[in-house]
Length: 185
Image (tube, rainbow, N blue to C red; front, top):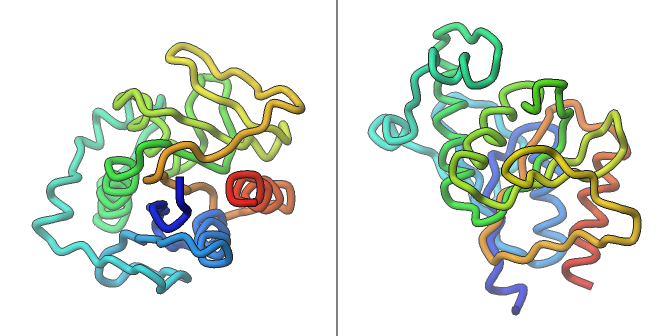
């Protein structure tokens, strides 16, 4: 596969999304960052501002998301738009990479968790770099399986999603750099 055929789908927000975007740019990979009017983003490259009608396409019941994620979300208009824009990131990616923390209930911490759960529902290949455990985990449709040392993770689909926590630790930053470096040597 030619790297000219690859596209990163993300959100351009501070933290993991900014790092995914910076690496995409460094390796000559196109990027699309889904956002909405009034949302603070750090990545302007490939910015795609979703209008009201487009955001509605990604709407989801907060009650449903709360049950699925085993936590309660309030009906905050900005948070709802964030979830709607995450829908676009996951919907467009064929393979999903998340930086964050896997919780005991098999969900991923924070708003990013919705992206991981949506990827599970869509049966998309899903990988999470857990910053606390310092390793990559893949979802096998039932449980998280830790990637073994030497089992190199590379991006294998042209259209992939990179998202995650806004609190990016150095090991998360390194994991993103290594993922791109191994995929696009």
